[in-house]
Amino acid sequence: PAVQGRARAAGIEAPMVLAHGVEQIDAEDWVWIVEEYIQGDHFLPGELEEDCRRATTADVGRQLRLLHAVEVDGFWRLEADLNSAQYATCRDWIDSQRPNLETATEIFTIDSSHIRQITEVFDEVGSSYSGKGRLCHGDYSSDNLLVRDNRLVAAIDWENAVACDPAYDVAYWYHWDSNEQWLEEFLVGYDSPDGDAFRRRTIAHSVLLSLGFVVWYAVDQSDRQSAEDSLRSLRRNLAVLKRS
Image 1 (cartoon, rainbow, N blue to C red):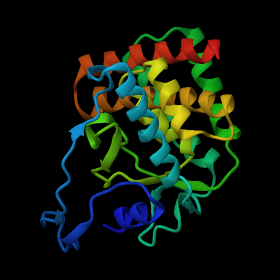
Image 2: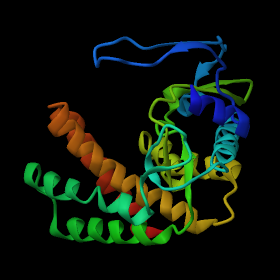
Image 3: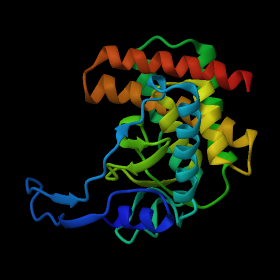
């Protein structure tokens, strides 16, 4: 509820929280939130006519940029006041993900050239963003975005909100389809002053996201097929990054 309120104040469309009970005494306690109803459809770019898709995708990007105007001290998990987060620097946050590479190589056969590239991506992402953490949705995927009449009418499911490099949030959206044309349309609306550098950071974050999903699906979910799909996504984005 606190994050949604902060997001609405920043200008991004999100449901108004009408009432909530989120204080847990025991881990098994139920929590609940009542939100306003907003009519819209899940944002599925592949099912939209081209002109509608371009306009809608741009608005989805434009509104995310509004959220990223909110600065936070630190990176990753937010403290209760939403003004500070778990890691002091972007590099600290990125370095915390490095064990994923070792775990992935224990499970799957990964080319040595790809291992080298991934290591370089860790180094690049850890040093390429020097700004403060920004408030990020953390799960900005198409099924958490409701659209209507060529615009975003609600971003929902805010429980995974974090403080990050803004490119991480864009990468999370891009990760699920990895469609470069749609990414370009998104970035038109997002209108980052960093231009091509922001696009490259987005692709780089997508590589690390894919790596994280490889481990999550293989270890936490015991879902080898989805882990292999994530590994294919990782390889695809390594190739995109190499071209950029």
